[in-house]
Amino acid sequence: MNAAAGHGVSVLVGNCGKTFADGTRALEPASLDIARGETLVLLGPSGCGKTTMLRIIAGLEAPDPGGKVLFDGKDMTAVPIERRNVGMVFQSYALFPNMSVADNIGYGLKIRGVKKDERAARVAELVALTNISGLESRRIDQLSGGQRQRVALARAVAIRPGILLLDEPLTALDAALRERLRGELNRLLRALGITTIYVTHDQAEAMELGDRIVVMRNGAIAQIGSPREIYFTPQNRFVAEFIGAANIIEAPLENGHLVLPGGRQPIDGNASQPGAVAMIRPETIGIVSPANAPLSGTIDSVSFIGDRQRLIISAAADRPLTVDAPNTIRATIGERVGLSIAPDAVRLLPPDN
Amino acid sequence: MRDRLIFASQLVFTLLVAAFLVVPAGLSIVAGVTVNYFRGIQSGVTLQWVAQVWELYAGTIALSFLIAFATLAVTLLAGVPAAYALHVRGGRLSRAIEELITLPLAIPGLAIALALLLTYGGFSEFRRSWLFILVGHVVFTMPFMVRSVMAVFGTLDIRTLDEGAASLGASPWRRFRDVIVPNAVPGILAGSLMVVTLSLGEFNLTWMLHTPLTKTLPIGLADSYASMRLEVASAYTLIFFIMIIPLLVAMQMFADREQAR
Image 1 (cartoon, rainbow over the protein chains, first blue to last red):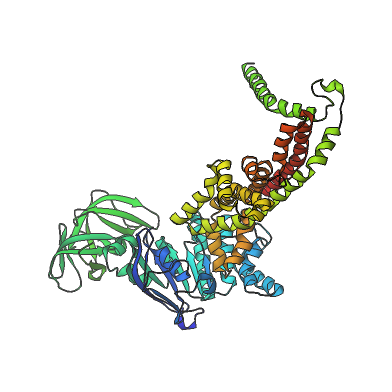
Image 2: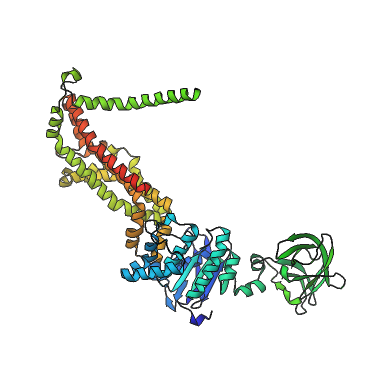
């Protein structure tokens, strides 16, 4: 999606930290720049500060002094949430039990003084968009989890917000439904083209939905980048291990070669470093004949997953390597195999942490 | 067979306990319509005592209901927003305030009354009016309203509902009116039920605060026990029953219907 063609506001978060009254630091001062129409995903394990960041942008939490939140360049730091024109989907959905589905969706419009006919038309439009036709007069406790999620989304979008904020909107659902709604949500967000901030701890959600992903850890930003950047060029060990599967190797580096128990693995460049840390993704490792491979090891275990098979190779590196091999090759436990890894598939990480 | 025996003995025990509690009430009611209680029911059945009570004490009954519903109005107007504020704000200060509101439950009514008299007894207009008793009743019943409303808030995640409404643009007042109050109705009803019944039956505090011209129903009852025939006092109890039972049943039914919704 071309950002300039998007809808909604651009968001600038300047130096926003959050220290709670009891002294806990939920968020180190951090800055974000979110383009109009962009979908930004805040990703990280629980307690990493992602929800606090979202709540600061929403106006539900005030940042520590010195922090600023700007929408389209306008300072919103002191503006309460009810005047920020944000659409928010809560993890628990926060649907009003005393109102019907239609009244929930139309509530924001009612607050804005939109006339009844116009309101009904907009509600009908959103009911169609989110696929909940026929549920308009239901009460909230008569809905399934997936239906509630759609109503919450419809309600947040109904007010034509400048920015859509989603706080783990799929977490409360079971796995199969989550996956289906993820695809649906992706199509919907792309169709709306509105600035979106999406909080999740699920990397698959982050990959599918995000234009950019902000990986967070212990209240600080670990890396910001496109899903590809985050996956292929993680800047530190935490990001490498949190996103996808990763082999992290510690070995001396000599003239552009990692010196490993099972051989010498070339990398890009010809650097030398006594205790290098490198990451190799399991799917970038090829299984070849050990005869003239630079690196070899022994197959320790084979798990057939269907579309591929996952091998654990020992004696190649300082720890067992995980290899995702095609499901067609024959692999036997105990067999000695060569490993072929392209030099540019080996990613050096900063040694500490 | 053994189960049935156990059941039967449990039933008998329960009925005995119930009878222990119900028989005095029944006797009291019977006494209220007996011509001469010492000669027993064979002396005849009469409504003269009821009529006499009505003549003498109708004012206390009216005043009791006035005070009960005024107390309800004050606890609703102050207690429900207070519960909302305390729940949403949270934190140590809110806890402290909640404890403070609850404190009158632990303090004897007499002590509260004494404190009110010491502080406001000098304002003779206020001291002589029924509003003085109203203040005592509000202090005494407020924790029941605040607590039962807060209990409902606790089960609903009212804070997230509040945030949800805020995100849609609703001002604090709109949120309170459109989302908080409608969802707190079960707690508000339960609290109202308690406030009204407690106020109607309150004696300790009221006894200290009342004047000869501001007697409530329980005060009149004590008065009649002390200075009238036993039949008159019993007729008074009968009137009390007739007044309060339908009220309780009505409010309970209302609460049940709301819960079943």
